[in-house]
Length: 248
Image (cartoon, rainbow, N blue to C red; front, top):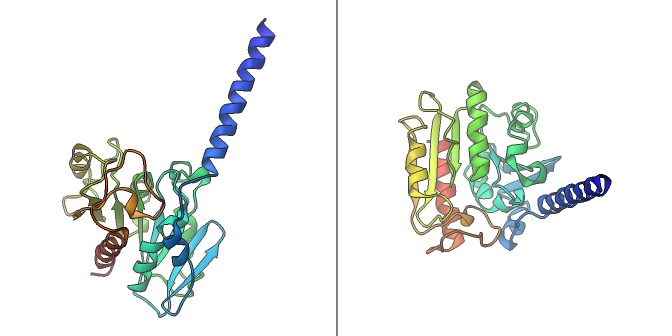
């Protein structure tokens, strides 16, 4: 009887592990617009390097670069529409592919990008680094900032906020927090409460009519609010305020 119980337990664990692996290997997205944004043209060169995608301005840009962490269970390519727009404005953008599509499993992965200040796929020297992310990715980017405050000039949060246990209010780092008015996955209480854990100088921007999923291109998300603006409009606004934050 005991042996039978052990076999059942092992079988349950094996099934759960397999289900997690399948779930991790089938993240949301990318959508049609994201796939189109992955193609190089005269304005932006897109380079795949290992677990990263680099969006390189065709002409030598500002010298700034943004390392971006995707949201939980979202394909990293789904953020191509906004990251491409940011590159068009002169900032190198790098998005990290996460193990099982969860940034929490690789919060320190930005180090690999930061090591390429002089030698990177864009062929452009980088003088200032920013890190950011969407949703869970933003929370993990905040963790990286807390642990490595000297490595970057700023933190960019899209529909994201630091964990309650993380206090960056005393940090001198520049922070941009972009949120959508119709985001059904980040409550007003969570958003306003998180502001207390960010520097007083934090720039907060609302995307009126936007929602959580439209920070990327990966389809609808359970629990999210309905967007009142097209995804392209949210991508444009988000890219614009992020670019203006990085290149004042």
